[in-house]
Length: 101
Image 1 (cartoon, rainbow, N blue to C red):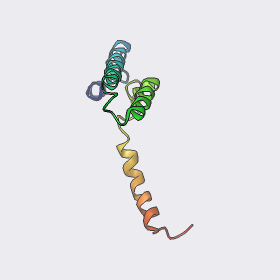
Image 2: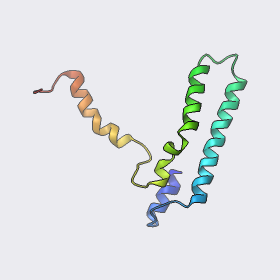
Image 3: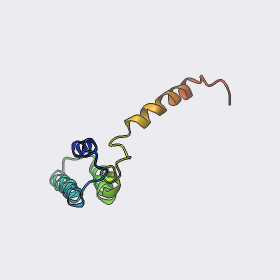
Image 4: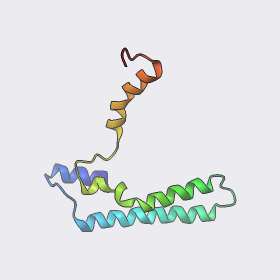
């Protein structure tokens, strides 16, 4: 998905075709369905079964939110930039080096 988006941006296109988006969404949902099947097969030995089910259900419920970066190209693929921007602030909070209120 990321590579497709990068190629579209490189080719000066600002949106993905609906059929391509639907194909990615179908693949995404198929992967999640395989995850649910594996979870069902592994219920006896899996200690994290409730957390896994919650995660799978959330991923399915919010599939359009997770794939929003494909529809709106101004949304980045990952949040690495945002996390890096906040890292310095969090470190200062932990060490107490803020000088004023």
